[in-house]
Picture 1 (cartoon, one colour):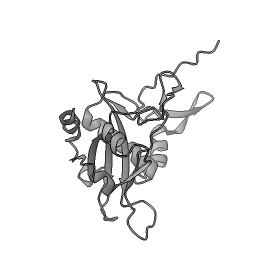
Picture 2: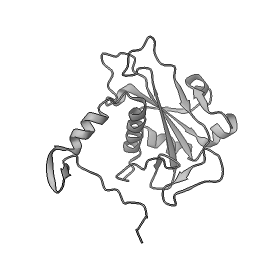
Picture 3: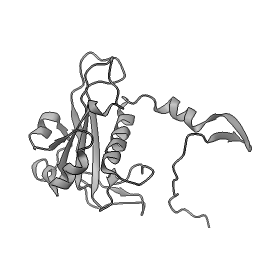
Length: 195
């Protein structure tokens, strides 16, 4: 019988070579990452980058990301966090700045440990961190410069009370809920101060 348990993913270094029939090929995992992951303004990759930035700020030790889990991050004390990102600028040609809004739709969360979906449609995490890449100059935008980001921390309970079945929220709608506004280095304290 084939073992179909979850694979324990270990972090790669980027130096790993591709191979064919036990022969190393002249390209590495780092080459693939450079080819596929260099556009940090891409909506999908920017969202993953935002997760990583918040992970670093929260001091989470888990070494790899779990795709499609019910929530994005889990702290050492078990607090779960959902990360959402938005930006005024995209890597493609724009005629105007992007309108800022975030996905807040309740979901049936999938749990990687059990390969099961929850039966209840709800918001899965204890907190949301809304990550806004606020910089508005295409010549100088750099998502790795963390001073170009603003973070808004909000308890999920507030979303559930004020925006029960709403699927998206604009920046103005979010600000009306009085989230805790933070810069990088302040997110962990913001979540701790809300508890």
